[in-house]
Image (tube, rainbow, N blue to C red):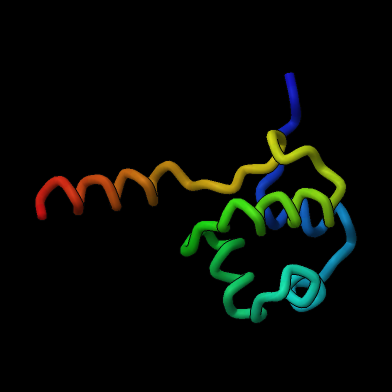
Length: 79
């Protein structure tokens, strides 16, 4: 069984601050914090870059919060 890392765990595993990784990803610190708190979803290119930066296979990083998807899909069903 593979170990899964949250975004925060992956970043800390690499020993990076939010500000450092935001700069490496080419986003603002606020945007990165939104990613880490699962308030915003990574674009696929940024997800691959994040995995490369932290040195963890992309399949072992949790990029997505299912509860967020559920809220979005429920909203679109009622619209």
